Image 1 (cartoon, rainbow over the protein chains, first blue to last red):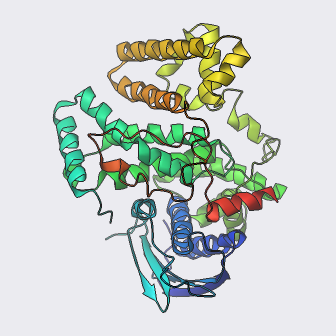
Image 2: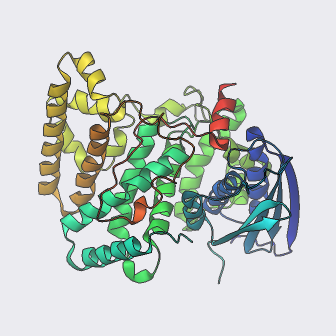
Image 3: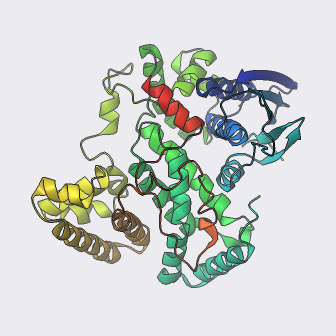
Length: 134
Length: 321
């Protein structure tokens, strides 16, 4: 029987936009999901999805910070992410998700969306446990 | 979520209904061809992680075929969503089977190798994917160590194939022999006997082309025949495989189309280095509706190694450091 930890947990993470630090975003997601009793397949999906979320927000930019917020309510994990550029580029939003990103997220998580937060792009995803009852 | 190509999407849906009703191979072929672009896109996305790009394309293409065969248009799910999930699942499995480029301390490598086996065993026992806690209990490791090992399994460098697990089995022993990429074909079982019936030289050419990713010209130089001759032998071999499989089983359609899939690669290699001039990084924009253009076959546009100036690409740079 999978142990369920139902208390809502919120974790915030802020990382510089550097390729070698995306591991922190993935690890945080995996850890939160693991604590919630997610199976490894779900965790693997979540890892890939979080990476895709980050990738889709920063594109080719290598400046600024990514802010991530993980919320676990026991049966679902919501990851919100927003990008804070060091300097806004006029006319450039920087977070235009390509179609493939959307497809990948469609495939990996139960729900996701995009928007703006301050001057920067934001996005979120929600992954429910495979064995969770609807 | 994907909102482009509404009309072509409807057209694809109509084809899927037609396929479901009549199982017409011609319709199936049209759908496969139309969706190969998606296989290339996804393979490119997960390139730079220690596995040859062409291997990823092959795995992804097979997954597209599998998706088409399993897709039920009555369920109201977009095919591209369904297929993307299948392709990613197959790519994950491929990376897992190949050791997903573990580059980590030895203890982590050992644990990662062990986790692969334990996960498989527990999945069968439990009828679901095991949790990290269950893996930790089964391996005697802490949950943190399991998470660390799983993360290491998503590394981006090729591991030492000499790393051994606790049973002193090396990663190499899990990978197999020289024809590792061809295993993706042979593992389908149906093609293996047919391949075995080919002449040794034809088998060699198939292996050089599809397992090692050599171009026809490179194969020609290595085997000592002309590129045209290589082309003819490849075509003949594929045709013989196609016939063998057709005679073998109804399910052989999967393998037949796989052959066709890889043959597209062969045709595409006539334009050398076109990927470099193809706007790498502007991924998915050029062929973003490849998955929904059933009437105009989408020629895979980037058969060569991709470059992607995104985090993936940067990770590759990190890997080299």
